[in-house]
Figure 1 (tube, rainbow, N blue to C red):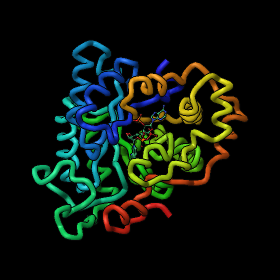
Figure 2: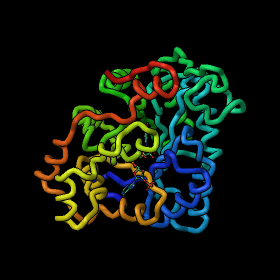
Figure 3: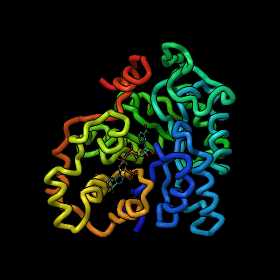
Figure 4: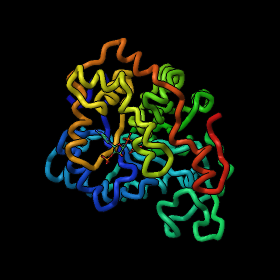
Length: 319
Ligand SMILES: NC(=O)c1ccc[n+]([C@@H]2O[C@H](COP(=O)([O-])OP(=O)(O)OC[C@H]3O[C@@H](n4cnc5c(N)ncnc54)[C@H](OP(=O)(O)O)[C@@H]3O)[C@@H](O)[C@H]2O)c1
C-alpha cells in the first residue's frame, strides 16, 4: 500500500548526487514510490527527469499515477520570472506539467539570469571576496498571483508554499484567489509543529513533512550533532521492537499517522524499500503521544542560522 488516507511517503531529492540521481529515481518508482519531491535548487532536475522518463518509457507506471513536486527558487519571485522559472524546471524534468509547485522559501532574492548561473543558490556574487546574499523587495502576494497564473495556464495542477509560518499563512489566505493546496515544512519528533499543522489543515491544505529524521540530513552539512539523532530515543526503539520495524520506520509511520505526507531521501535500494514499508502496522495512541512528547522545537533547517553562517547574511524568518 503506497498511499492511504490521502498521505504518502515521497522520495526527497535534495543532496542526491547528479551521477546517482536518475538511477535512484528509476529504482524508487520501480519499488513503488509515486511521490517525488524535486526543486530547482537541488541542481539535479535533469537527472530526475531522466529517471522519470525511463520509468515511464519502461511502463513502470503512468505519469498520472505520479505526484511530482518542484519549487520556485528565491531568485525568481518577481512575477515576470515565475513562469520562465517553471518552464525551465519542466524542460529539465522533461514534463509538460507539474502536479505541485511550491514557493521554496518566503525569501525573495535578487534575480540571477539562467545563463549566468543555474541553479543560482544563495550567494548573489559567489566569486566576490566576501560574497553575500542580495535580497529583493518582492511582496509574496505578487509572487502568488504569478503562481496562480500557472494554474490558469494548465502548467501546474496545484500550488503551495514551503517554510511559511502561521502569520504568513493567514496573510496568504486573505489574498489568494486560488487557495494554497499544500504546506511543506520541516517536521520530526524534535519539531512537531502542532499548531502550524493544525492551522494548515483547517485551511484545507495538505501538509508534507520534510527532514523526517531530523538531524540525519544535517550531519553532513555540520548543522547537527551526531548525538541529536532521534532514532536512538527509547520510545522509538521500544516501538520498533514491538512492531518488528526499524526506528526509521517508526518515525515515518508517526509522521503519516499525524495526517502528513512524509518525504525522505536515500539513495540506497534497501532503505528505499524500508522507508516505503510502513503501511502494514499502526502505532497506538499512547505511542503516538509519547513520540510527539519528544518535541523540543529543534529546527535544523533555519535560514536565521545558516544564512549567516554559510552565506554571510543575517536573515531570520522564524522568531
Ligand atoms: N522545502 C524545503 O525547504 C525542504 C528542506 C529540506 C528538505 N526538503 C525535502 O525533504 C526531503 C527529505 O528531507 P531530508 O533529505 O532533509 O532528510 P531525511 O529524509 O530526514 O534524511 C535523510 C538522511 O537520512 C538517511 N536515511 C534515509 N533513510 C534512512 C533509514 N531508513 N535509516 C537510516 N537512515 C536513513 C539518509 O542517508 P542515505 O542517503 O545515506 O541513505 C540521509 O542521510 C529532501 O530530500 C527534500 O526533497 C525540503
